[in-house]
Length: 222
Image (cartoon, rainbow, N blue to C red; front, side, top):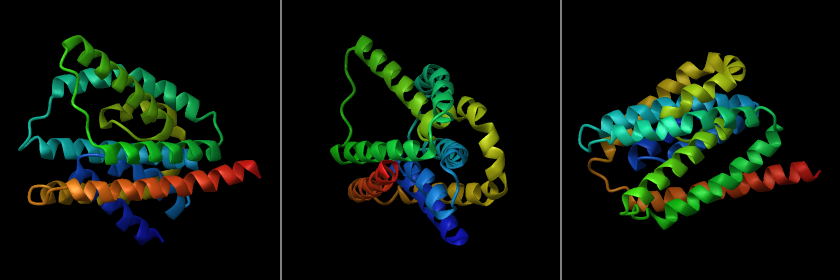
C-alpha cells in the first residue's frame, strides 16, 4: 500500500502541474485512505505536499506565462489570518465531520471545474472585492481542510504542527513524489491541451467526493 500511495501522490502532482490546479484536493483522501493517517494528521501532511507542489508549479509556469506575484501576495496577505482561524476550527472538530465536509467540498470543486472559469469583473473595485473574498475563503479552507493556496501553508502549519510531527517520517518520500509529478505535469502541459483531461478529472473528483460523503455521513448517523 505504501508504494501505491507514492504512485498516487505522484499522479496528484502530475494533475496539479498539468491542469494548473485541482489535483491537490486529492492529497487528503490519499493520506487518509491509502496511508491510514488520522484525518487531522492527513490535513497537516497535505499542507506540506500541496504548498510545495503549488509553489513549484507556479515557478515552472512562470517561465512561459508570467505570474502576477503582486496580486498573489495580496491574496496571501488577506488569506493568512483566515488560515489560522481555519486551523483552529479544524483541530476542534471530529475527524469524521472534517472528512464529510471535505467530501462536500470535492463536489463543489468538481462542479466548478466542469463549469469552467468565469471572466473576472472588469470594474477595478469589483475585482478587488472578488480578490479579497477569494483570498479569505481560500485562506480559511487551507487551514481548515488542508487544501488551497500554496502561499498560505505557513500560518496553517502553525495550527497543525503537532499533527505534522506524527507524519514526518513518511513526508520525505511523499514530497519527492509530489514534486516529481508536478514537474512532469508542467512539462507535459506544454504539448498537451488539458481541456478534455480537466473534464475527466472533474468527474473523478466528484465521484471521490460522493464516496467520501456517503462513507462519513453513514458513520456519523450510526
